[in-house]
Length: 155
Image (cartoon, rainbow, N blue to C red):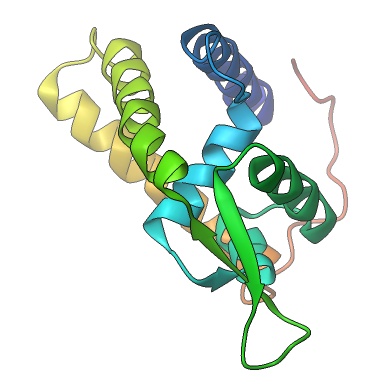
């Protein structure tokens, strides 16, 4: 059986190329767009909260947000705890989010267009379960995956 990580990463890289093509006439790249959508869905979330929500490194989120702020898509302001920065979309950020979501929907629809409706439901359900398990591990809530296994890793 092919490695699930190889398969998932290949789909993810292809999605990123598609998203990049569709965002070509903007100053956004796929990672910035994903971050902006997170901000639009959760305005007022802290940088750390956004990093956790997107399962990304805090320093990477800070770099993405600095880019988005520099280009007028988000603002960051201190919360009640002055050490915590809260992130909000600007009008420019809110205006482009529907386009980004449309790009995501188009890719998703194309990707599973050859599946039957039953296969689409099953695929989504299984991926959601895998995602939830992965997130629980990252959040320290799940059991640890095995440190190593016997046999070769397949591509």
